[in-house]
Length: 312
Image (tube, rainbow, N blue to C red):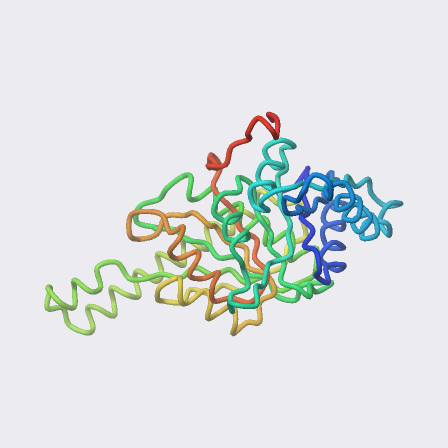
């Protein structure tokens, strides 16, 4: 998957040089447009000009080493961070947002409130970078969720997008690629409680369920690689932990020392419904690495452009 119009959101007061360098490299590799913005809080009118000028100068200093390599647009906006970022996406049709992750002093989670709002509401993929960012990633994880007993076309497309993004980044950084799908055996509890099944019958059933989920994961990767046949892809490691995704994905990310997780923020689980605000956010609150969050096509943001911000 290629990005054509990337938006980098500067986080004032952070060591973000390597994070911005990764954004520049991605834009170069994708032959994409790159814009860097900073959101300043609303201030008195008499102070606004000086504050904007100061932040423009700081952005120019960050961008200066790359001016000969790439054309980079700069803008300073005023307002609430997540709202102005999403409105910028709507106005300029950005297809990727890159932002250093917040890390408020009063919580242990990597992602602060603006970050979580972006993950929930931004219409394009959001790449939140844990600082200090690494020049190159060593381990990248793609987390996919699907129900092989009830296939869904939109869910499949989201999973393919996740795999393609993770594979492209792993190839670019020469990183190891880990594909993870956490699963649970359908009707296992019912067999134990109500069906009076023997341990052997249950073990046979669980193994058959494992093979079904394994086949589904292999099939997704095979389809993704067919679409990326011109890219030299790393051979992935497959992980199919049995258990709730909200526990297993975070556990494996720590165990494997993953630098980046590529995952969906809205996807269907074995239980009907969406896991936005449940599984995805539970995972995000447990990990301490960078995250690239992808939404399904057709996702509509609840944020709207107001008259002061113009129309897209």
